[in-house]
Amino acid sequence: MGEATAMSEVAERQDERWLSAVMHGAFLVLLASSFVRYLTHDRSQGHVLTIGSLYAVLGLVYVAGVRWAPAPRPGARPTGRHLGWLAGVSMCWVVLLMWAPSATWCLMPILFAGLHRLPTRIAAPVGALLTALVVASQLRGGSGATNPNMLLAPPAVAAVATAVLVRLKRQSARQGVLIAGLVATRESLAASERAAGTLAERQRLSAEIHDVLAQGLASQQMLLRAAEQLWSTDPAAARRHVADATAIVERGLVEARRFVRDLGPADLTDHTLSTALAALALRESTPRLTVTFHEEGPVASVPPPVSRAALRIAQGALANVREHANAGRAVITLTRLDHEVCLDIADDGTGCDPGTAETPPPRGARTSAADRGFGLPAMRGRARRAGGTLRLESAPGEGTVLTATFPLPSSSSSSSSSSLSSLSSSSSCHRAKGSR
Image (cartoon, rainbow, N blue to C red; front, top):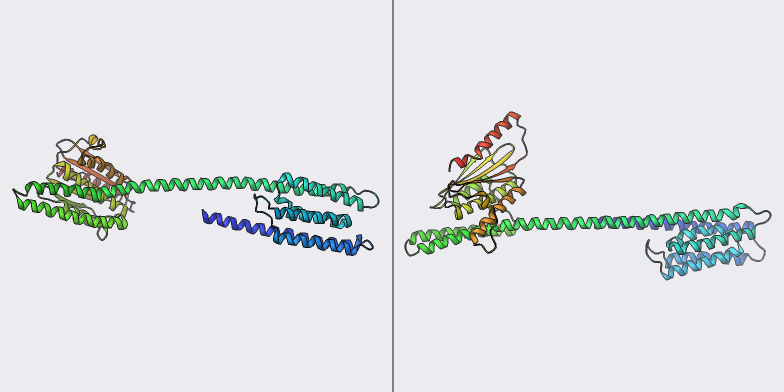
């Protein structure tokens, strides 16, 4: 927007310089031609030196004003120096007109070059006065019958010039208002886009922090509390819990550093989604919870946004299984078809009421409830931002299946292949539920 405004200002200045150059050139040409006209037709005995001096003074005053008293920018107030120059040029022209009626046509460049920058309420009366002087000069210098053109031509030309100037001023004012409105609208839209981008980034960062830091800290807390309880009765099991907590700390540190660097999952830096999910299943497996990973179909090429969302959803889902489900087994199933990729996380835990599970916890609730209240909406938001959907199927005492489905660009498969793939998707996306 700034670059476009600057380009518009440069073009406007170029137009102004071009118009000024034409007007100044026209004045000098008319000044010279009127002097030649005086020498050839209106020359009076004994006044040649005086008239020539007046022509020279008018030309010098005009050129000096162009150099040291430039016209104001459109819409700006004229300076005192410019007003003084206009008054001086007008007085020199009036005095010259009294001696040489040939200087009549020098009025037009004066009107255009100087008076068009004045407010209309000032420029119109001044222009009318100068036009009346032109008519009086023509009548005084005429001989014989009165020529109607002497009376009508100068006012007609002045009226046309005035109408054009007023029209240009009003059009420029309307364009200025329109441009100001457009600039304000663009600034408002830019501010709205920045605000929306900031809000989306905050939501994404909150989900990243929840998945990277909060889930890891919750796991460490559980392991360390278990180690504390078993330290005196079963030191070996307590040490295993401490070792698991240490491993979680190391992974969390890697994730946090990666999070600071480019906010992307560390497991996806040098690995595919399948490899990352397999490594996640291996890490999350404990003596109390066995996590396995299954892959259905070639899942080598998944878009990065879908891969990041799927991995984060799997991490959040396993954290909920570990903390709340009291499950002994969980299965991660990744299915890739021509038109979509499906991620299932199923467990054989205690299950829950889906409506209750998605209700945000009350203010001041315990950490586990707060995590549960934020985790499902966060996972649903991740799926939505990646263009997918999230579905929760559960019942008390029957375990839970969390399904995330992400659409992918369709390949050039035939319609029959697509129908077969869709049927396969419907069965494979829920295969994990039956295998709990």
